[in-house]
Amino acid sequence: MAYGSVRGMRDILPEETPYWTRLEMGIREVARLYNYREIRPPLVEQTDLFSRGIGEATDVVTKEMYTFPDKKGRSLTLRPEATASVVRAYVEHGLHIREPFQKLYYIGPMFRYEKPQKGRSRQFHQYGVEAIGSIDPTLDVEVISFAWELMNSLGLSGLSLRLNSIGCAADHPRYREVLQDHFSRNLDSLCTDCLRRYEENPLRILDCKNATCRSQIEAAPGSADHLCKDCADHFAAVREHLDRLHLSYTVDPRLVRGLDYYTRTVFELVSADLGAQDALLGGGRYDDLVKMVGGPATPAVGFAGGMERLILVLQGKSATTMEKPRLDLFLATLGEGGRALALELAKSLRSRRISVDLDYRGRALRKQISQANRLGTRYLLVIGDDETAAGKGRLKEMDSGEECEVALTPTGISETILISGGKDGT
RNA sequence: GGGAGCGUGGCGCAGCUGGUUAGCGCACCAGGUUGUGGUCCUGGGGGUCGCGGGUUCGAGUCCCGUCGCUCCUCCCA
Image 1 (cartoon, rainbow, N blue to C red):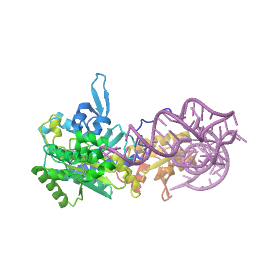
Image 2 (cartoon, chains in turn green, purple):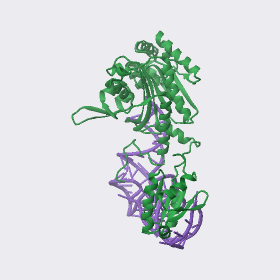
Image 3 (cartoon, rainbow, N blue to C red):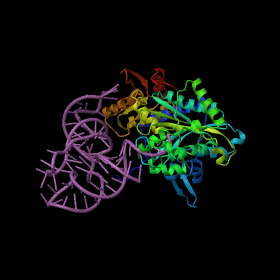
Image 4 (cartoon, rainbow, N blue to C red):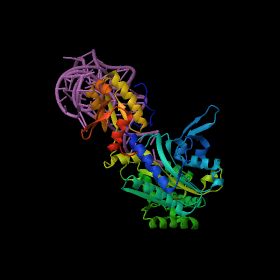
């Protein structure tokens, strides 16, 4: 093999793309129902936007970014996530001036330099929603509702929502102290990573899966128990509205997210059908990010979901078999004359919204029909010298095997196909 | 970053303790049949056995290295 795709980046082949288009359509439809508008930021941003927005000490920033200098020596980075980009666009284009409240969504590739495994690759795809401009708890709930709605529309079950509140910027140092106090009693039982986290960001320790750290973590005080009055009220309101909408969740005091910009509400939707990488989507509030990026203090909430993981779950369900699109008409030809006429007819019929294919390799008639059959074509028409001379042929409906005579004109063929109802839609 | 397993035509695999021209299924192509289907029959193309080195009379098979894949850890979507 002369070339292979770059590690962690793969081709999505035609057999698989129907899953992608279905998923993309599903996302767009839910976005329409919830009135979110699409935004498409570039894939590349100044490195600073991510390192400062996501957090200098996070794993994503310290070791997972594709960062490179451009020809003028500026440091650029392939986006590892899109929230920072969306917020940058929101500020840059003055969306906050024209209409401070914006509900946006995006779909596209992200890049993180990680070791590939099931449900994790270096180029992967996320969809996400960002609701910017309100601190109201009902907005948190709308975003979560969006997530559930999408899962339902895809027919997914066996999912659970983990929910927590990590408080506001003012709560963080206080909770940080509480955590440090807790872990300081048994520092020697923490792993080396957690010792570092102990200094840099004790919140991260809660995320550690290391067995030796687990017992300490189980006993650690939850962030939701150390919220200020406003944050506690907010969290209570979020839960109340979730209950009212019958959206299920479990409060997980240990849930913290990997990106530093989160405040208050954080959540994750996990699937039991995946392996170690079981988070289908994750998100929360980021009330300080807009200001951090240079805009006015503006609260916001959103989430991002991994499309590869969603497709893994979809494919795992035998119920969601993709039926392959059918070809309307195959023109089997005999001889140069037949081929020339078929080519001409195909062009006209296609412009009449009928999908047509024909043989381009001079294959035996039998092989052509066999191919048409494999394509799942609805109609077959053989065009040889006899048909060309007579100006008419026999249109065969493949499912029933019935044939009827048609004039070899675009109108003659298309009317028969459209009238007989063999072509659906359009 | 750490750990484990696996790399043989496009795909899925076999190849026993090293031993002749590396097989099988699917797929592909052709013929059986220039005039009608998923079946059947016959034939065909396609593999430097991931790559490099070593051991040996001889390596797909053993050893070392390397690259890649998969899964776990970690982290996340």
